[in-house]
Each structure stands twice: as structure tokens, then as C-alpha cells.
Length: 181
Image (cartoon, rainbow, N blue to C red; front, side):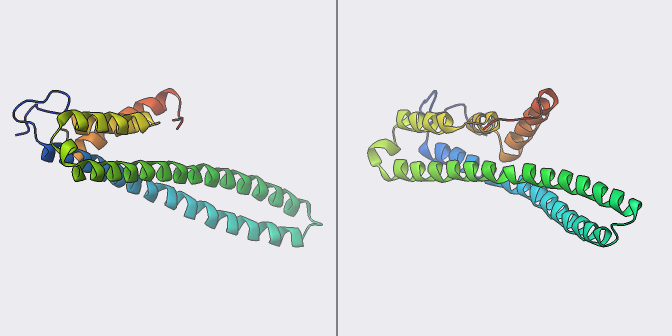
């Protein structure tokens, strides 16, 4: 059973090993979450671009018969559908900005953790751990990152932290459908 001791409220049960484990779990959870999100975006991109290619072929074929009125209308309809698919693709590509930002945070966190662990005078100092954790939290620009960070430091498992994050995102999406980062 995990004790209540943490860098926020250290006691005789405080250990840097537990703090290290929390931060490693945070990083692993972030990477796992981004990989799950990547699957959805990549599938959307694949379907969109496949559809675009098919529609472009249809437009080409219809433009061959341009004298016919129905062919012209079909070409226009395909152009509108293609435009819609392109818009969907652009939105799906925004995922990569988020992925890059998250992986940058993971990389920075791991480098900072390494620096902390390598310094004996910082390694056994709970206040240095707390300072490092607050530095990590302050770099986050997305609420979902802060929620996951807080859950992991409260001792939640990766699965619990991801579930909390997803629940908050669903609630936010009902309100505005956009998360600025």
C-alpha cells in the first residue's frame, strides 16, 4: 500500500524511489496516451486521403464528359466532398503538433529526472524533488497534461490517471470542442 508521504509533505516514509517511480509512470502514461490518440488520427488520415484520391479520379472521369450537364454536376459534388475531406485531414494533422509537444515534455522530464538522480545532494532532498515536480507542471500548456500529472503524483495508477484525463476531456468537449495548447 502506498503511503501518504510525498515531496509535498515528506515524513520518515519518504523515498526518492517512490518519487522516481511516480515521474516515470507519468512519462509512460503520456507516451501511452499519445500513441492511442495517434492510432485514431492516422486512421482518419488514411481514410481521408484514400477518399480524396478516389474523388479526384471521379472528377477526372467526369470532366472527360463535360458536355453532359449531369457530369458537370457530379464533378462539382465531388469537388465539394473532396474539399470536406481535405479539411478533415488538416484537422487530423493537428494531432502531430500535440504529439510533438507531449514528447518534448517527456524528454525534458526524463532529462531533468536524470540530472536530479545524478546529483547526490539533490537526490535525497524531498524539497529538490518537489521543486522539480513543480517545474514539470509549470511547463504544461494543456489542462489534460496537468490533470494527468496531478493524478500520478497523488498515487493513481497510469490507467486511473488516463481514465480521469479522458473523463475531463469529454466534459470539456461537450462545452467547447476545442482544447488550446
